[in-house]
Image (cartoon, rainbow, N blue to C red; front, side):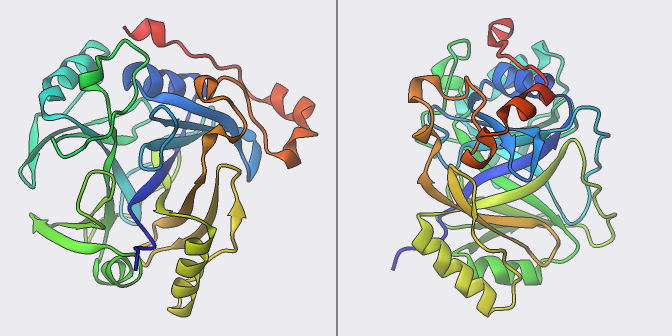
Length: 316
């Protein structure tokens, strides 16, 4: 029987200024802006999707930019760091590139035998680049980052929790995850144990609750193949006491949501249909795309959104 959940689908964060957000993730990190749309639950706010060439599940970091939003704080009950995958030979390239654009980084760290660096975006969003040679994904480049050094997609995610037992039960009994290893209070889980499916739990038993605002993760979404497998996992979760939403149509995937026992908002999202349903693959992210129900209100929605543009030529 195939696994119902196969790793991370996307990670969604709250941001501040929309243009700075686009500049950081496309310009400095070199991710492709694959979709420019709206927050379906707050149509006066953008929803940006950054990823590889097609926005393949497992590569897509998305943001809700609220201009003027105060910075949130990292703490318990939150996903605190998003880890991206790079090749081993690329680590020094990224240390130098981030230094060039005055992004402070940690020293080179070692975790589970792999080298990494840790830093924050302009809003305080926690990011890691983990160097490994276990990732065959191609990633994306606008041309100014050499192909051999591109970010390939997610490596994994860090959940900061006061306790792990109930979250571990959820992951391992109902979400196709397996315990991999423990190191210095960090507990690692994976579906296949490869970049793109890793979830780490870091225990902070006496930590303060995180405050969600700009620079914090709103939710983490996990991959499932299609609507049928999504309904199967929804039934399993509901039968085991989790409060799961109805299926929501997000145009580019279907979603269900629930909170894991530690307080982090989880989503299960379908791999289908993808981001090319309303734009040509060569022109993804170029136009503001609205869902059908919002299209009739475009003349009211679009003027309220700040003008943004790609400035990748500034980041050569």
